[in-house]
Image (cartoon, rainbow, N blue to C red; front, side, top):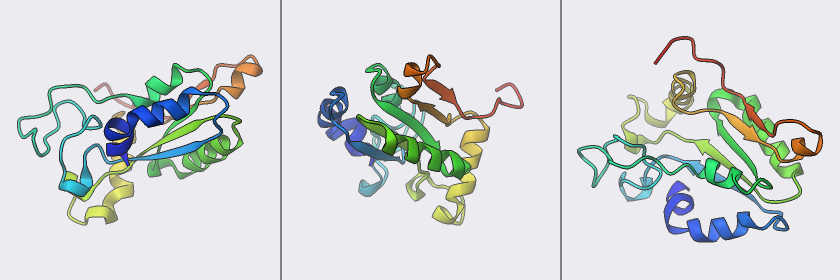
Amino acid sequence: GDGWAYDIGFGGLDHVEAFESNDVNVLVVDTEMYSNTGGQMSKATPQGATAKFAEGGKMQRKKNIGEIFMTYEHVYVASVSLANQSQVLQAFIEADQHAGPSIIIAYSPCVQQGVRPRGLDDMVEESRFAVDSGYWPLYRFNPELVKEGKNPFILDSKKLRKDV
């Protein structure tokens, strides 16, 4: 989960992803808070969001682990959401085929966020809102494309229909 990846276990995660010889695939289920402890704020919580211990809104920006791992240049990185299931599948296939470390960060709305009346039954729809509004970008960073002379960063999100 994100509590481990963004906070408690980040040092270990960073150590594994930093070395090109580590052929390890990691999936981070990002609920943007410590969900198992009743919705506490974490480094995955976005700025301004309310959560336990941040009732007035979190002051700091959300830690961008996708951006952090792209700086290593050899790590496959993807940001996915069930709003686009074909993109999720493509990211899993590419991460598996990548000879080296990979990390996929999956947006996962949580009942602790007070999501809609049906809770997790509304997860796909909530994910679609996040992607369509530009809140959660869908992208893939595939280092293999550099070997082909291509840009390794692929933005899978559609252009926003309106200014925000």
